[in-house]
Amino acid sequence: MNKDKNCSIIGEPPMCYIWGYDEEDQRCCATKLLLLNRLSRLQSEGITDFFIPLDAGMGLYAAEMVIALMASNPNLHLHCLIPYEDQACKWTPELRDRYFNVLEKCTDSAPVSLNFSLTCDIDAAMEAIDQSNTLIAVQSDETAQDKVFSVALRYARRIGRRIELIRAPYI
Image (cartoon, rainbow, N blue to C red; front, side):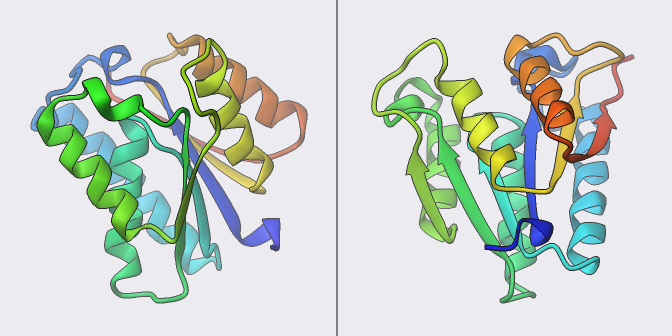
């Protein structure tokens, strides 16, 4: 697989953003629009494969956007990396339904770990970054609050990935 045509997408957990899980908040809507615009632009530049560590926040939003783009572009592929097998068990029913809908429609999915571990989230993010030449990183504010996100971003910089940073509105 040609990494030049691949993009990974990471974000911080929902509670790091000022809106939390409120997807109707105008700042969340604005951030999602920025992400969708970036995905559309990268698609027009020839990116065909998107690798996403599937979480209950930006990973889920991004995966749903890629699925929407796949409807009009059959050359796009969504690869979901699941930090650990049972991660969605304690999610709300609505988030769980969205999660399983994404898994049904994605090109492929794979758990990075069978069971929860202290490193499963970072392992999923690094695996996504390893598969891609471009990274979209959605940051909650001026300085990232989440350790997994910060470590993944530093890793991407260290191995020379092209980074497209989106800073979410935080006031």
